[in-house]
Image 1 (tube, rainbow, N blue to C red):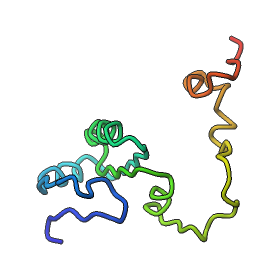
Image 2: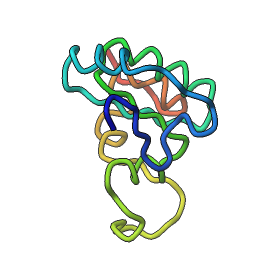
Image 3: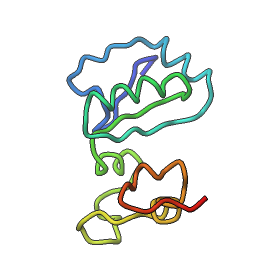
Image 4: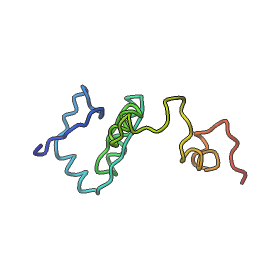
Length: 115
């Protein structure tokens, strides 16, 4: 534990030889107490976003699926209230989605908000 990086189950770096020293972790701690969670199924995209975010966050955790993200956040499969099925819009998507000018590109089939 003395300065070594610990990895949680499902975090990026499994088998990829991440041997970065404790200096980077110390610098991250000095920047503040923010923690970013990156979820992407493409390892290249995930690594790019992770490295970009490391400049502004004290810790960045990258995982490859929503299930692993929930695990990192402390949720288990038994905590889910909805049955498994096709993805549904969550509160953010339904409240900001097509009407929010910055998120319109996420919903190309939806008409944008009139200006």
